[in-house]
Image (cartoon, rainbow, N blue to C red):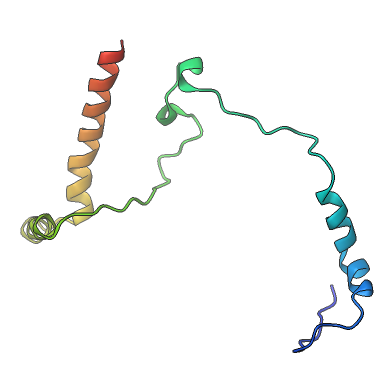
Length: 112
């Protein structure tokens, strides 16, 4: 692909660039209809599967989540980390993961 020279002015004749870079085909493609319809995922109720049971989920993929703590609890967490020599992440994960599982268990038992 040919590099265009940098200029502070736009090119005077754009027609050669349209053909050279295939912009005409791109513009025409915008006016065509989709041949495939997007697949709508089934609800967990229909599949008897919850989102966390999806087989495509991987254990090695970590998702980022921000947590807002007021200053008092942030200082408490900081003190725990310094005292126990564990990271703040580990301290919170050790508390959070069992809490999430317990909350889900409680909700699911009500729905049965």
